[in-house]
Image (spheres, rainbow, N blue to C red):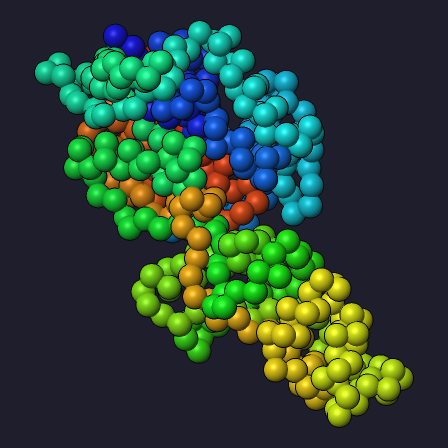
Length: 417
């Protein structure tokens, strides 16, 4: 009989296991993959954006759907606690722009290896390549977690008993890393409701997407999101065109609202301002002056536009921009300030950074991460109905809720008071 079973060895599950074992609990960590932290290895484009050092008042504005639920967990294990925690595990960190924290090595493997060493040092029992079937209640109120273990292509059923269970299975994003939504089924089996799930922080695919845009990065632009005729989001920063469409920091920030609107059947459009620091009239004046200097006229603009546009954008952007807009010398300034792209689709869970939706947080006690339906059952991380913007917010949510769930389970089992 273990004190605590933790299902899922991602960010939330590993921190929960380390915190619980540090307090003397007998912990077993069950993971679907052959090793811990497979999705962690992908975060921050392989660099692992551990956290964001913004204060709660600012940090909370980057969370959806009910940030107040997370406040207790944030103060239980804050962003500064996260930095101290990883440095205590031997991970040197570095602070970058926009308050982001990375391992100094800029390699996610540094973080994953440090967590793995801590689990070994604390003698946490780890069961890998195990697919959890269900969690049941014994007559005495304890839990039995049943799983199937794959070993050399053979499937072997197994079970472990515990006094408490922490579900940290993640959501549905990046299914190649083992995210199957299994935690939702465990939650449902105990009477929990699941808020509608959908991919967030994912690529938005413009209608008739010009693949020539692939691999182009735009710096210091602004991006507006329109649903119907209404502007519902505005972001400034960098964006990338990829094989899936519009990504990067500003693309990801508007993707949640865009995906939700597309699922509802609404018309979705983005508007890119390539020159946000310059007012339209001033940009138009500059274009007129430079056109006169270069001998560009309304009559010859069709032939000269490709060369002329090189003064206003990266050279690789010139042809797709020119071919994707009905350009004239007179409307060029307006198009540079308002490049419209209707959004036809989005990339699903296979590339989404995080899952929006999940276990209804109204049914979870924010002080402990414990289930309101079943004492001794706890939730942590992406399985819950909270998701964040890109920039370290989602990992901090996972670390904080993992730490608080561990504390809740330790209190429930009487190991700490």
